[in-house]
Picture (cartoon, rainbow, N blue to C red):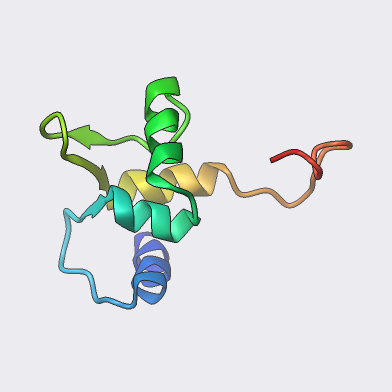
Length: 87
C-alpha cells in the first residue's frame, strides 16, 4: 500500500520522493487535493483534514503515510442519495 501511495503522489507532484519519512507541505497537499491553503487551514482547525505536524506557528507538514491513510479512508465506491450535489 505504501508503494502505491508513494507512486500516486510522485506522479501527481512530478517529483521523486526520497525515502521515508516524507513530509508534504501544505502547498503539496493543496495541489494533490486541488484545494486552497485556506481550506487546509479550516480543516486543521476543525480536525477534518489529514493529520499534520505543526513545527512552528507558520510551518505545517503532513507525513506522507498519514496523508495516504487519510485519503484511503475517504475513498468511496457509491454515493449516498442526495450527497452527489454537496461540496
